[in-house]
Length: 209
Image 1 (cartoon, one colour):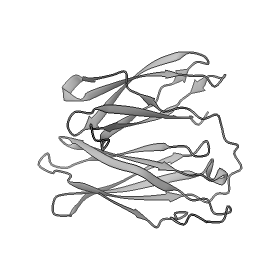
Image 2 (tube, one colour):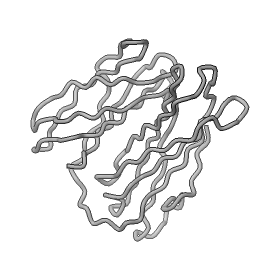
Image 3 (cartoon, helix red, strand yellow):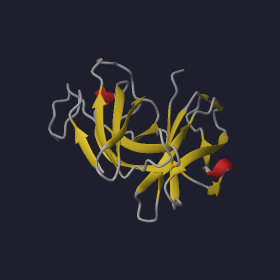
Image 4 (cartoon, one colour):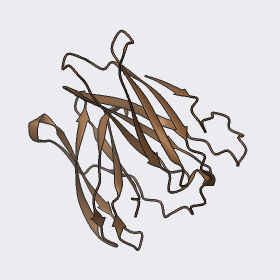
């Protein structure tokens, strides 16, 4: 795996002016199950001006010879400062014989100059159980608790699964319609992984409502 930066709004400089919010990759990895591969990109920004801006993750899925099999993208948005944003980037392969051996990851941040205020952080949650699902797909189960004081509507939840060494080996996403204020929600996420995960982590984010 290699990580590249260079799209709009990206920088590795630590002393970037506050007028130019940046985004960086915390970690990334991928899993494959037959014709489907899922890369998980976890991105973050420490800039308040990144709140409300859109993050685009672009992933090249490559074979053992370094040839790009597929290039896919996913877009998400920051809703609080220092948020760890999990972007699941999915690829449907044309042939089951195609095997993803590595990925290249690029991330970019929009520059719309949004003025949205940071919202209450939603904590990442680890699995309560991981079980084989239908048709061989793995199911990661979480208990999400809404302590924000308001109903959480159309939440977007990215899921990253890791092996015993902490390496991301796939994941997925789920979109619960309503997590009522003060209530808990059992989330069953179908994930695409390579091997057996030691742990999966859900990264909830606010919906558009």
